[in-house]
Picture 1: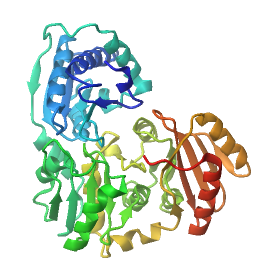
Picture 2: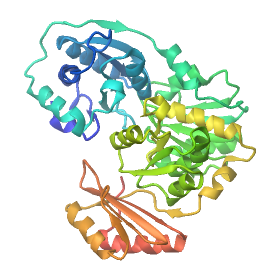
Picture 3: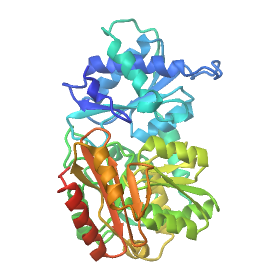
Picture 4: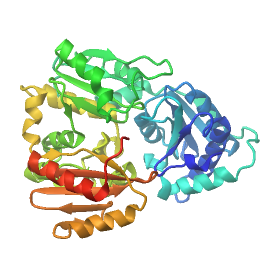
Length: 458
């Protein structure tokens, strides 16, 4: 088993060279051993607390990997509830709904078709990452010399669609307009879940890439602009009100307005601020530090408490819990909800967007126009070998600004700011710059490139 498949937040690699059924068995065995060891202090009499739930996405090798994973869990003595082919957020729902000690989703999310992986969650669907158990699971799994061992645990197969649908639809709280919505499922799990959950609401849904044939019409990563081309052309051709593109496992989405313009996810966060603060006045709202100044400004404007956090779902979810925040948004398209076990969900985000758009009398472009008051670079990658030294140099070069080290280095001035942070897995620095004018943005980007070098395609 290639140890490089263990990443900061999950396990991911190319099938079958890096990640195969043998590796899945060992990871299942190690995950069951670790998660069950974490039950100290909990009531072991609860029926499902010794169990784990397992789901998998639509990739051609996902079901086989899930079966091997389950056998490894059984050999460790764990009972398993197999909930079938699902979107990733359904595993978070299942862990809480069924009361298990954790669960695993077999998915490679937005990666190309040759990839697969595992997203591991513990009690209450708390994420298991590098600092919260993944190192221990890696140690156990890589120490296993074979995949032998009887099935000491049981397997129960169940379909949670009805309960999951009820959970998602409870977030629909407005009279739904007959909006014409183009949905690009990216040949991913939204292709299964959107019809099951949202049909019958009165939406006019135009479906693209809903098929599951083991290939992707485009990579299932909606953050890459070229992957939105088909969605944008369909919006214009069909004169739709809005477009939505989900990623492969449907935990993220990107929204496109009726003119075919992509709406940044920090702008979506800002759009949701008054909507959520009306539901929970004075609540905290969490946002990642790459987000536009507009997010903090809107939170303060509507009487909320802004909580700026470092990038990554484990940090966002932890802060959401500790602050009891009503919701949180990340630039990557992950949106987190207090009333969804502090977890993210693309489908619940879609439900909230239905509410917001159904309550508005103006086109989407006009709805977000007041929030587009700054000019942003978007995230740009630079190949840098000594990442720490470069960030120190940036901090020195811009020492006249207000700096912090929450995640990489952030420096803020009165009319522009930047964040530069290191990749966890590659020799890359990721840069975000925002300014009050396009001219200033261009000027600062030129200065940044003089210091860091030319950006790389990524």
